[in-house]
Image 1: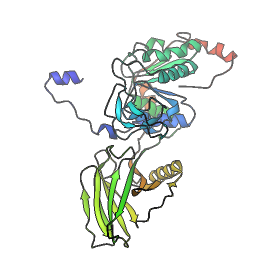
Image 2 (image 1 turned 180 degrees about the horizontal axis):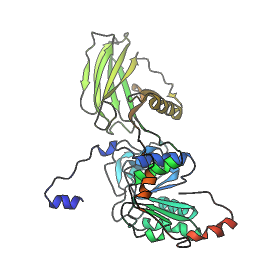
Image 3 (image 1 turned 90 degrees about the vertical axis):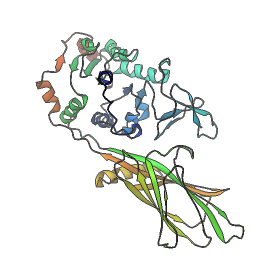
Image 4 (image 1 turned 135 degrees about the horizontal axis):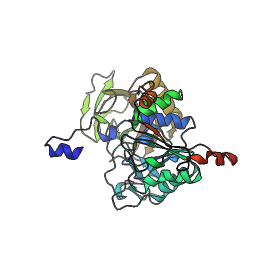
Length: 403
């Protein structure tokens, strides 16, 4: 389509959202619910947009064959880091960051394959094993033409599994499938969820940032020279892509001058009386693609730095934040998830979680029935391509359903 548009001299269509703010589709969120219901056992993706992880699919149940544009990996210890910004390199090259593990510290690499790169064995082995064990391999919105990934569904046939294909166009594997639906994936999946009486969960995106307050006494020890920085949790030099600007004001302190920070790194330097405590009000103005324009956070400042770290139950706080956002449909909610302090130099870093997107997909009732009535569903005859071996399998040990 892009080639024909270019030949006609037309401009290519622009994306409605920045890549780093792309949102999961109805199908992405339906798959999350199917996994929670125990129906979806494993997911194989050829996309590099990271949306399956972002939507809520557990990492251990996902194979990203071509990598993830938002993932860095440590070649030494194997640690993975999901970023809120697009990693600057592709082709399994070294990036500008290092592993956070103090026992490692190796240079990280991106995970996106270049043309000459072989598929990662860790991802491919898991994909092959799950396809062999699958009762049903569901192929959604794929042309099934890129090798070796296109041959993965066929591995289920050897042990009596079935293939179901949902794609607008015909694929080279249609004749191997038990069921082929030529239609839009979102429409078909909405109908499946309706038939299963399962709700499609909303997409709630929570981003993290840290507020760092560094201080030092003046020579006469009457004043405190302090610096406020709003920074990425992925490192002080990492970008903070979802923040456009930061407005800083002082609660109940009319004599303190407010400021607007327009450029990253968002940093404010001030000098105040040592004995005076106050409360900062940070208004975070979000970038394009976020669900609301801004959010406010109150940051108390008393210049008392404790060496104790506040290590909260992060998963519990995040879940509570999601539940509240879902109930109130309120974007911009935030909560503290971690606080760390150092004595040299005196500084305190507080990590905040902020709800930046809430989106509810509306499934179309009877969508699958409409597809069937429109004549775009094709069932293959029983006994072809392994679909007739179900009787033989029933005599043996029944395997867990996988898709």
